[in-house]
Image (cartoon, rainbow, N blue to C red):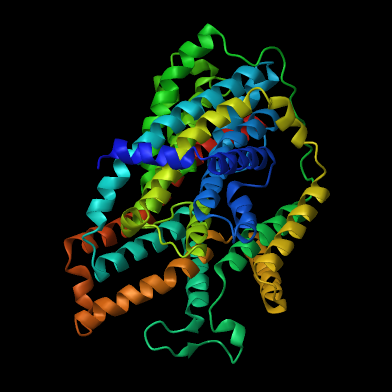
Length: 505
């Protein structure tokens, strides 16, 4: 059966009334959290993990993917109207988009961001549908050493790509790997680091850790920052629609942003922030209106926003086909899969194709939903910016606590939520990324199992790990995953961030 047939079957699954409802809830929540400064899709998916524990797996995962896409859409609203990038990927949008809003062209800026996101999301989702099966066929030839090399690549990717320091990323990863050791040894059945506590024999609950680190810790960190910078929301003046000149200047950046964003999102150590920075640099080179950059060039909004959303679809290629998360939201979605006893990877395409293809097809539907939701309801999204921050953060803390109690009514689990929440707060306070901790806990046991299998087959010969060409390539990519982000940060991001700071002054 070909990709078209699988995609049509997926559309049948995604078009079921309940799945359409889940997709609508996801894109609406995603847009809302994208608009709200300081709250991202990773935090929202983490909050919903315990709430969706007993729901249908397909519906829950469709909702999570909708939140991911919606968060990428909604982030442009905050960047353009408030000049407050919620994530690093929105820095470039704020750079040009807010200048357009101040000049009375906030409407066209929001329009080119929304339409560009739709175009990029549509093309990139089709790219995901056609490329993922080829990656799956390749991955089916993996043995224990190849899988271990893949896990090493995943570890290095999240450690190097998240945060501004590779050393801090690796430190956070080893915290997660240390937590992954707790519980019953899968090979020998012996208890490890349980300290006689029966609740620890099953190991650390991934859902509890994800909610604590992303929701509790992140909320405490954002709340402790206070209102250091006065926020001014730029009013949307005039028409929200683009004129003929805006269309003529936007369609090429949309396509270029898609071409740049999708492969970078699919790459280890890629991500939306790198894609948006590279897209901005490309538009400065190709644009016929170079003098407008830094003053409100529409190409500087169209290209990066397209790259931003294309990279979101690209991120799902390694996640679904290899089980490799390359962003914080992908890491939490991986926890969502494991919550239902599912492991993303080549076997999932064979054992549960309806779920995988239903998820991919739902992204096409989500794109249409987002286009309808964004522009006509822009007034509603702007009003969300007026929600008092104390109410917002108190609500998140309450929701996280009640969700954890509902999924696992245990005093011990509630205590773990508090401990890991304070750990997440401390890590954010000192600049340590929290996504590697979650990835270490999720993938640590699998990496250990594959390593021990490979060494058992080779009778303890460590060199066998590097004798396979596939494993050698994956270890080489892991090395590049450390080097590439350092180079890209030094050249691309540093230049754009300095320009952003100069424009702020």
